[in-house]
Length: 217
Image (cartoon, rainbow, N blue to C red; front, side, top):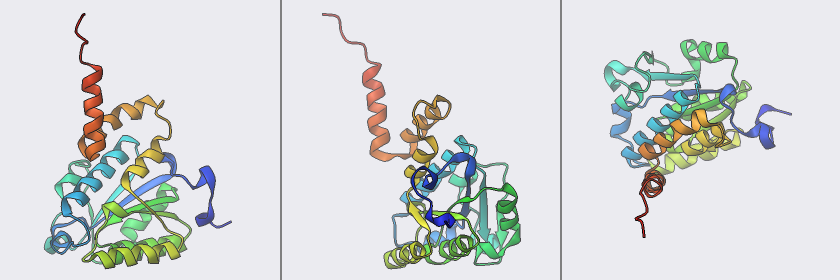
């Protein structure tokens, strides 16, 4: 059975088997981002970054020609202040050994990718890594393209190569798996309030109601 045909629990993400690669969330790419509202991509990739840190999932940051295209966005860099993004000339991240050597040395096979743009800097490494035996997941709502068509066609293309599309909240939910895991669940509650939109607002409201004393009759 190939790694991309895993089923049941084996097909779900596990923190101890996961590694995240964030590709080219830089100003130049955002200037021609038309598939999504840019604030949504920023919110989602920041949430994904914080979730990876909560679950101790190794996360690689990489940029292309940062001296021209700009530094990786602050919302990611602030989560990993100690990490200098790997700056590439290769368009395809998977042709740069500075990145692939780190992934290989981790021994982890669940590869989670997000980046700009979906049809180029995400699709190329995802397709190559899948052929090398990695179980590749692309976080589609933390990716974006110069057009909606470009994003959607890239996702369709990657699915044909056995790559799994997923959103960022599904990633952290599979990592968490059981809300009885309080060490991470407690941290996730704050993350939800910050990055999960209406769900976070509703959770904060629920906490308000639970902590509001009922007037004595």
